[in-house]
Length: 116
Length: 116
Image 1 (cartoon, rainbow over the protein chains, first blue to last red):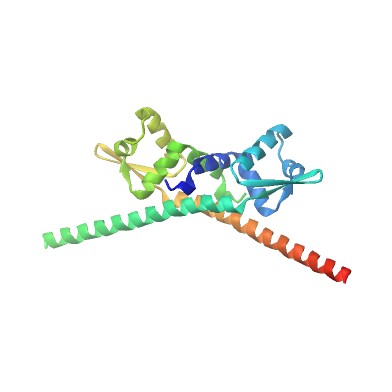
Image 2 (image 1 turned 45 degrees about the vertical axis):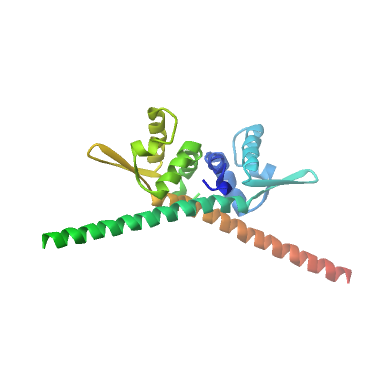
């Protein structure tokens, strides 16, 4: 695994929860104060804050305190890192699939020639 | 959340484990029999099979039995679905960031004009 993708499994784990997944979707639309962000969720605030802390710990969300208000924002760079890993897996898979297709084609041609 | 991305949080959860993450990376390189795939992992085979079952259940891996050998392959379509979701979050975030930049710029210009 290339060094830059170390610990990415933990980032996937952080995204793999319905509350945290929804937080990311909301922050993609706009930065938000913690209290606004928490509003649609029915859980207790400390539980919500725990989810936010996990997203922050894994670099998906940044928070900044201005006066009394803490504002949360999406970290696009981390989203891009996750996407890059998926890109690599998909490309390798596609190259391999293509090679298998070509092998199957050669095999079919050889079989046809042998039968002719 | 658009319908096509329902349950994607579970797919992230499925990817969020070091063993399952490593399985995806290996299958991206080439399809593999279950026994070959299990070789580098030190855990007991039933534990490994549980991980594989989770990846299959969430559509990331397909398995096919030919005679006595079960072959596993990556499901590129699911990888693409996950990537699409990340693309959307990233694009929305970038558009929003751009809009904020423009607002900050207008504000700075207005402030400069007021001071002139």
